[in-house]
Image 1 (cartoon, rainbow, N blue to C red):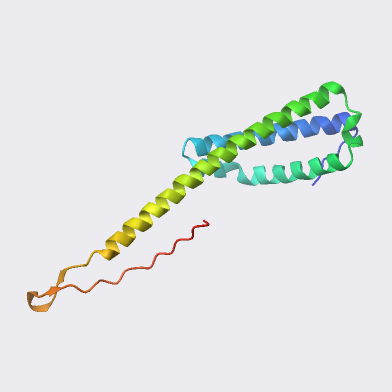
Image 2: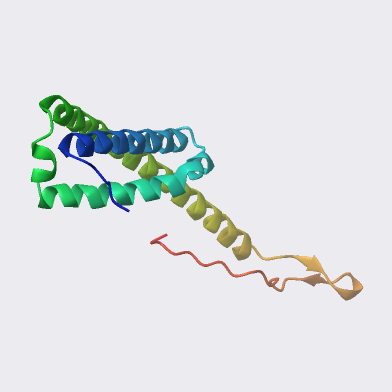
Length: 149
């Protein structure tokens, strides 16, 4: 999908709308991660993905052919630059929020794995037939950690 514009002003206006909507969606995702509610970020994933793909495509198109936007009114081009700067700022914010959530999640997984390992290391004392102490380790489920997760 591509932007179908009648002239440079129309193209720039559509790029502004696209950039502002994408900025809004990514800001909502950043807030969701910052407030420890990552499941809220999933609400707009499909729309964000489609718009991000369109944004990437259109950005490459304009970079390859600046004539698509250079004849647009100065005021529109300036609005697009401001919208792009806001978009870059919100991307940086989202990146920090996602990285923080990743670090917390990895810490939780590591702590759980250590607890499971310590539980397995402790000998399980049970009573067998005739009231005799049975120190055989009990069989547990395996756990695998991937440091790259």
